[in-house]
Length: 618
Image (cartoon, rainbow, N blue to C red; front, side):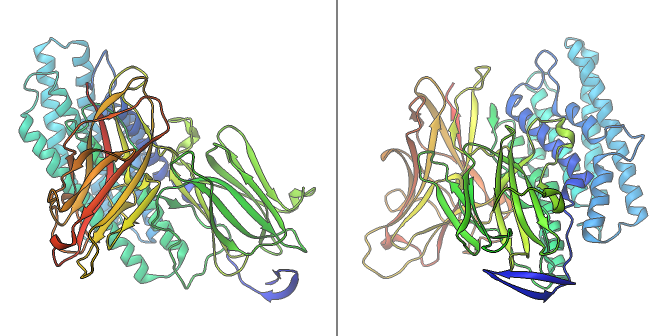
């Protein structure tokens, strides 16, 4: 195919055989089902964490059943059938008919027994003092729990673990939500379950399910990388499994009804994904364009267009971190600059879609339109193009909610735009983040109904990391179950004269309450050593004032943190409650690590911070 390549002002002839890649993630039914599932769980965890039934409020299981099985068991139009078919396509492998039939038979039984449980719960809600209604609800709950224990093995059949992984993750999700509901019902029905036993089962099953999903996601990714260097295939696997498996298991921590005994503002899903590439991607090379960085909010774009033509030659993203008064941050240059540029800021908008116009001869972008949820548009092109219909139009977005019926907002917003390759007409990539992640760090004490609420802030939403001496703070890729990147603190013993090694994680906060409020603060972390009061430890300051200590404990051994399991992470509370001023944007929370070099061990000292949670005092 004979095409034109533009190098600055020079036009040359070149031969190319380019594949125009379709963006298929939005068309996969399994992701539509999973996106709807997540969109239901997040707000219900946020509003019904304590009381599962108040005046007939629906439970999560009852809310999920018609989404996962919209036509009951009379149709193959359900989450599990969809994710199995999607995974076959992504992996280009088939699940044996026997394994599929076996799994679907088990799933039909699970649906029936969950629906049977739902009916008895509905009846009990209308007859709460009826001992027969209570006895029937207990029996049906117990039968559903037993059915899950028996059935889970059918979703991890040998040699099909990766192909069945999204089905396994979603079945595990239902089982844990059922156990959670049982623990909550025990608060309002005397002796509904053996509480201690069921809580231990809940924690054991959660750990088991997370371990299986983490192990087989990583094995599947390793296998596909060993088979191909095709970016499209690897990215499609990574994106699909992130959205259908890892997002699900990242929520499992929040299902604990004792740790999360209040409504909770969850901000777990900070992991970003790429939609399918626009244009082409090299088939013989895989380079992940994801960076392990602090969270940033996309605020604008500067686009450059060729001197002698209309085509896009380069661009820069512009960001702001989570401190709202900070300056706009200029991102790296992709491509090359010219004197023809367009620079626009997106104000406070969340971009959910990009419309792209492409010259089919040069295979180059001539126009970009960014769309936000308030129907605003930002147009980037060299000039007003009068005959726009002669260009190919592409719409790029990542929305897993079918017709937005479950949630008015799109499921994901644009996080960053990338260019991948050496030439202007190589691949363009769009990186997305879940809509539940807010641009700032708001701290709440109550929700709109005046109920106390837990605020969760991922450590990756810090605005700055600073180091002193030999200590290093950096953002790294988190394990499968954390929801995204984490912060690593590491320090090694070196013979020098530094009196102190240290580092600070700076987290700006916006307080959203009318009176000074006190909070208990807990941190979810992993560490390979213990806090040691005066010599090794961490403390919390607010606007430079010391308010509490973080007395972390050893949770794993050795220096290798690349394969830590769910059981290597834990919560610990700071040793003091902390007061925050009302309605201000001028609060900076600093988590400061300090090490006296004389007391360091010979191995590298490591602490990994995933999230910080604020629990208001009643």
